[in-house]
Picture (cartoon, rainbow, N blue to C red):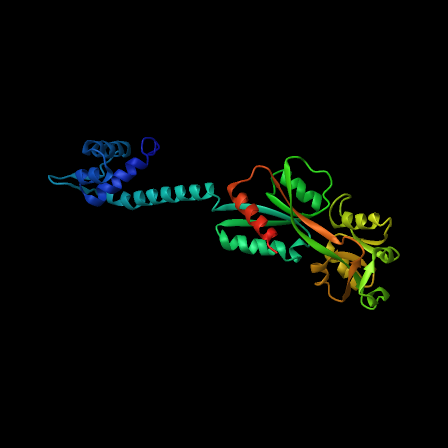
Length: 302
């Protein structure tokens, strides 16, 4: 038989109060109920358990050995119930919980997303953040599948489901990266026309997505076709292969500046920017609402 069939928190609260005061009358006063109700709740517990919890005295009551043994457990049950309520209320308010965050490879190497994570974790330490680095299209699909809550990816983004919300998070300057000693490194900036004659190291993004497509669009806007010499699977591969003398590349400045033995030059006569977007579903958990709000605040700062 389950002892919890007819016992609930009212029974435990009544038992603990009566045990602390050793008086059903005083327990009734503290609980704001009639004394017969206290007696009935205790009797229900004793009948259910099959043994007495109190000895009735001429004045007041005293705990039986079984009642004394049960008292700390009953207190713990009430404490756990209170903790459970606090946790549930905190979760409902978005103060605790978990957010699964995806991002394109190398976005963590730029300052904005780490700054957001640092500030959010300081403000809401009880919300756990989990991270997953994926290719652009895969990250977006995982938001649709609800495997990830929010992702940060580089535009362009191809055709997206209407279930998704896309917000600009920040823009990065795109720069040319050249091997040390390359003739083009002698000038302060490099044109796309000049770069189109060089072997370009290109990231292997899915067509229509990310840095790879953005670089293709820059050349196309000038009526140029780049000469692809090598494909790599992430942005840091571009700087690494450039340092090795395998060609030239175009990457965000913050990543170029971490690239080691390479020359960094501005792109001349073009809109050399790339946008990092934040993508999430329309329906947001309370935790994600807090995260998105802070992301917007960080994005709006100069």
